[in-house]
Image (cartoon, rainbow, N blue to C red; front, side, top):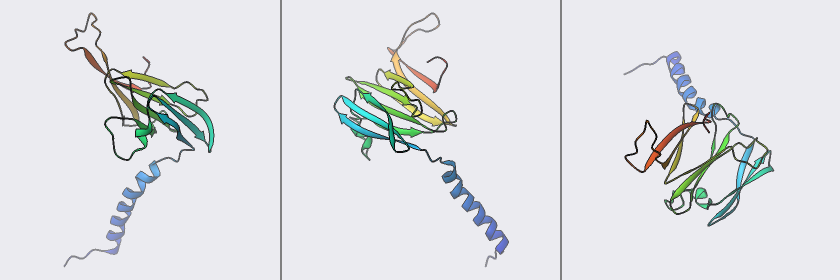
Length: 169
């Protein structure tokens, strides 16, 4: 029969508790939120609310209603996410949606910039994607390949990977 001391048991329990509590305490409580005010085939409106008061609204030429569904609908492919990065500890709103026949766009909104302009917008020819890695926001999209002296295009589209914000915006 295995015997364990109370002191050792307390150490193990403390470690387990620290592993459970650490991710929760790492999440920050944001004092802003967003709401989808309108969503139709080619027309959506998101409002940013700070301390429960609407501060700005942003229009989109796409249907964002699919972002509210719990299951992913390949046809809509709309997403609305609150993202906290090292450079933006108060959070950003990252929105993706289909535009036109086959393109996708990504929009980044800083809720504390009291303006109607978004921080960043990019339309990918066929796709856009984003991820959060080591506290940085990584963006990925495709664009028509442009031949230059140091680059020959073997395929009509090239993929761009970038960290946002980037100096080359």
